[in-house]
Length: 292
Image 1 (cartoon, rainbow, N blue to C red):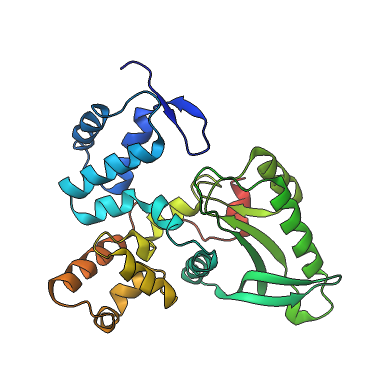
Image 2: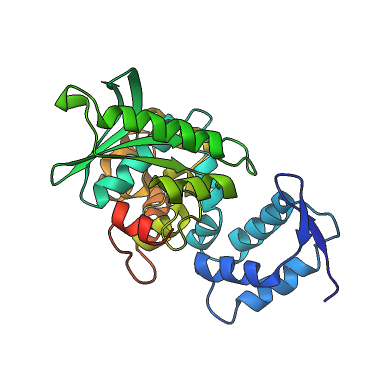
């Protein structure tokens, strides 16, 4: 096919990559062999200069119409994570939930005092006596990257907390977690300074996208069977995982969701909670740093 330039969220243009679309469709659960039908349909609609957002909407609508709900839900996972906003608090809860599934205890929104200054810590995780302070950078806009100044700032804060006089405020290491991507300079600094960094697709195979897909830990905002108001109601109650809905059937009833609607939501949540592919290694500093 002739080269078609598409416009990314940050305004840059790049050639449309058919292989990326194929990979995203298979990752979403489109049966192997049927992805060609989807791509043929999409290619009829793509025009030079078309935005990635417009392409996403077109693919999502086609998947939602042509396949079972969980396939469209998996395809929409990036947008679903953005829908955890506008504040960063639900994403902090989401990060804490991922860590709990990896065997950590995790608390959010703590005030700790370092050697030189007090600090607000988004997530404090602990396992086997090892304490990790986590700064969570949530961006509402696709295309916005977490940059070098963020990495410098986070590293300095947790170095101060490593030297905290009080054991209750002391951490053993610090992490920087974001729902988007890192700049090259931020990654370079993190590697050099020993700062664990987790982004949308970084480190390779252990970013947020991989963790969601491999662990079946989708946010409630993925669910196509819930309205926006119903999703917001769940987030207001600090419920961020589809897994919670699957495990607590009474939750939907408390929201006035019953009958076929409840069955549809539970069915979609159950399928989304089923991990796909090979399970990941434990989500800890040794794993992520090993892939830097």
